[in-house]
Image (cartoon, rainbow, N blue to C red; front, side):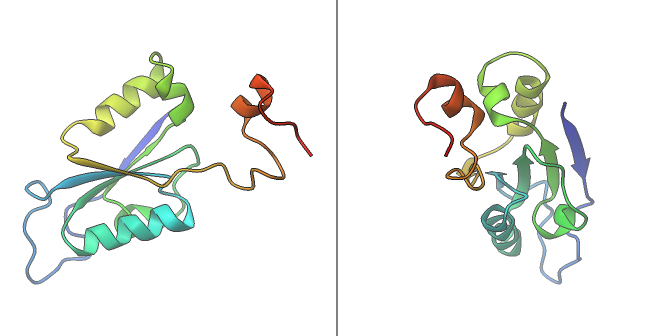
Length: 125
């Protein structure tokens, strides 16, 4: 399941702002996490339009603070090349000039990612 959330240009308004439609667009994976949200916010401050992507839903305030547009999407499913997640990620990538990959599996030592457990490359503790 994928969810797309948007916010109007330049929120909050800035004195010397070029329209976000003309700004470089950067996709940030892991946008809900501490690092991804911080990277998105920093990019917005220097004039980038930021598309945030995460498997988790956007918390209140993410759209507008950490990104201009948010797509809830499982990157592993999207990478499989078919289905709703793949289509949502392709749509999110339109017009993107850079990707900053901040997505990670939180607490992998406590709960390994499902793909790692499925392949046997790691064993749960």
